[in-house]
Image (cartoon, rainbow, N blue to C red):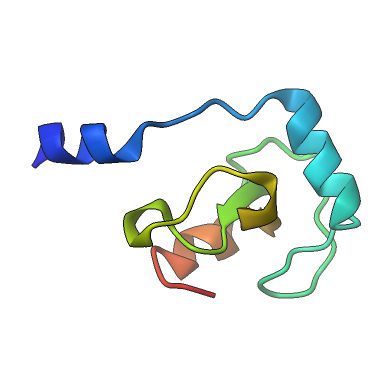
Length: 84
């Protein structure tokens, strides 16, 4: 399964500038809960900023900016691989 998943995933790195672009586009608001995201918190903090795939990679989504939205880390984890 690991080999299959790694071939399918083809992870692409999201640059800091692209992260900031998406965050500004989304006005630092979590698209899952609607609350403001604190940009000063570390990324892995519960309420830290993360990028969520609207259509998960496992469901055929891509790493294109149109498929990425700003979310709190905890909201992103809770969503899992469901389609929003």
